[in-house]
Image (cartoon, rainbow, N blue to C red; front, top):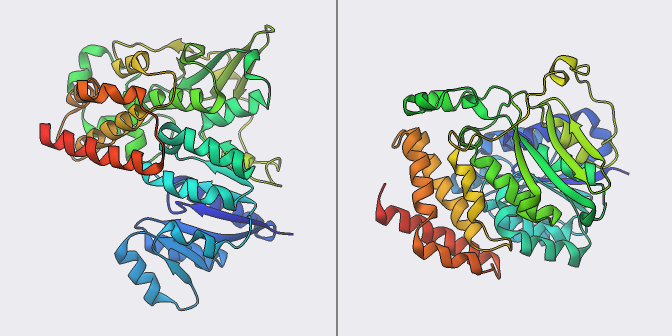
Length: 385
């Protein structure tokens, strides 16, 4: 029997990678739902390729286009129709929606799927306490898809977290890992977008250049695996070959490595074909003999110090941090601020006194998170950049 699958955010890089995998095994899967924000042309193309009848497009222009394009398709403009679209529990859902907009769809679809694979880090960072509650209630299996967290998840493999002595996640260091600190004042947008090992969207590429992505990944790891911040460390590893290391209390150290290709964790998260052979390069002994693992140079990447100020318990402050970074990275991408000011402003806004109280406040529902996101954006605009 075919496995029924939904892909939220199917027109992004993760969604496209999953579709590339699935179209090679069409006999094993039935795609019951594809969703996008604005890229209606790509969404329509995917629906034809995989014969998908149910589509969600949240952009008004895209919704109107698809609604007029074909009467054979079931077009919806939001995720409130999931109960109508999905009659029973499907086998697998990939949430690859970008940004905090992916949180509400995550919460809505958990009750409709046996497995949810999440590539939307904002959901895990800001709404983990809401997600874990839904997962337990609906007995839904969760798989993280980020290469680092999938690697940790694979290595832990259900073991008691009390047996973990230390978790290590790796960072390529982005384009500036070998750039002298004295040259950071001259960094241009085009320089920050030249990632040496990964091919990603612009937003995450900038986060990789500042290492803000690793701040977020440490928060994710703390939430997912239930270990304190003091047990999680970041190691720079320019070749992006090793993705996670775990040191256990019994003295064993496990390392997981693979080529820097997101199709590997994505395929291994899928039911039935996870263990299917994937064409990859031979073991790279040259890299293994020169791993070049180091602690982070916080003088070059000072945003890592934000981790020292985070509360151990999940709070609304993580939503503030996500929102600050999102707003300022977009300003950088629009060339309204330079790289040096990007770093300065992230630090400045994260330390605002009125934001500190949220470190002691837990999100009760998704509205709390979205309301705070809007307020922080308003506050930043009122202060000015």
